[in-house]
Image (cartoon, rainbow, N blue to C red; front, side):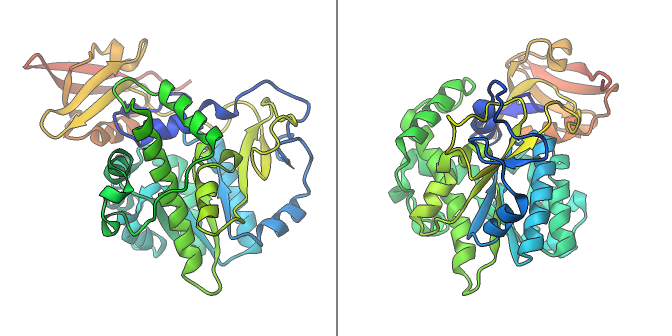
Length: 386
């Protein structure tokens, strides 16, 4: 996956990126669905009317994504609209935000917040961090159609705690009453071990804790969906907007949902035409949607190219600088503490990410850093968008 803006330590954005990055790559095959077409992962073309009639009878429909792909989110929007035409009694569940910000989602749908207030009150850049431009169409769809948005996730600190200490060590009222995850399929465990080996240095390397955190993440989202379905005698159709790595092959969230008693939760995934959609992968999802290869839907966001660590005592510390990046050209180094960006203080990694994402390509961003206890100034020069 391409780098987006800034990376920082924690189980959120980086792990999410790794979970959905290379898993759908491959070599083009004759069975790949043409752009705009629905097919089974084995390559059998599906009639969209019949498919959506079937999906409308499900408990939940889970839409995968690679978080940084604009075309994936455009596909999700179209699929949401088609599902809404079948089942206007819909709820959209979001991986992106923790349950603690549910009142903010309610206010957004009710039209009580503008975009800036929503990002501020939801603490978007801390909880998720991916460019909100990717998600605005879905958020506005919910607002226009008065479709409830539900936060499915938990705070990163809780996910970490559950993974490290175990569920029995965390009181039930401190984990939203969510029960312990079902044991994962062995194939999913092996996949997560591979993800752990690929993740950046400085993050969790203990396999039991890493897998425990991922299972906590999956269980929280599955429980959030289950709670919606259990709350009414005539439950709505729940559509989950979730990273593909949590959904593929029925592992992750679908596996946990089945353990909670909801087995009718088909997975839909976007798939590039160049990718291998042969019969060797029939269990990937209920259906895949063909997307044209290329970046015609991608937008270019400014990228500083540094990995950050946030610390209450030390502030925002640069852990690493990507070769050839804007950060390297600006003279940033590992160990630098970032104090200010432009005219704004930097107290958390999310502060710097928010500032960088708003930079206009072709302009400069002054940076104030501390190196070896001494203040220094640097200038990050962002190239024009091609």
